[in-house]
Image 1 (cartoon, rainbow, N blue to C red):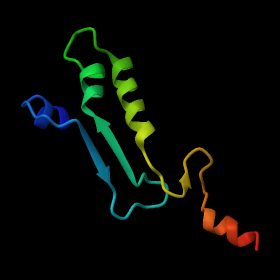
Image 2 (image 1 turned 90 degrees about the vertical axis):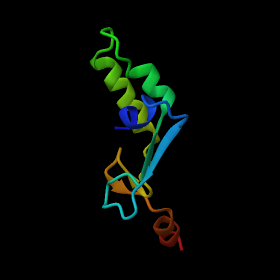
Image 3 (image 1 turned 180 degrees about the vertical axis):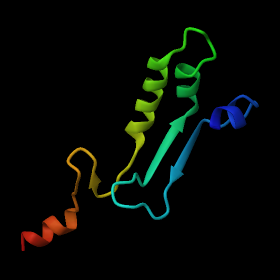
Image 4 (image 1 turned 45 degrees about the horizontal axis):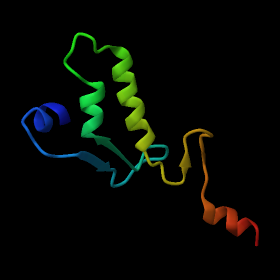
Length: 87
């Protein structure tokens, strides 16, 4: 949608950010995509393949902000709770 609606129509947009208003537990609070990534990893060439799509997805994955949730450990990592337990 981003590519077809904005980039291919000549928009000068450089990136798109999304913020989730009320994320459920484990859902990213925000993420973004950069227009340069689209040009680099989603070209209409026959050379483009699944590796490019995966590389693009990985770039987006790195921008996700999970708030207090740690997707690597599948646990909440709330600094306030940790500070309270030290008292």
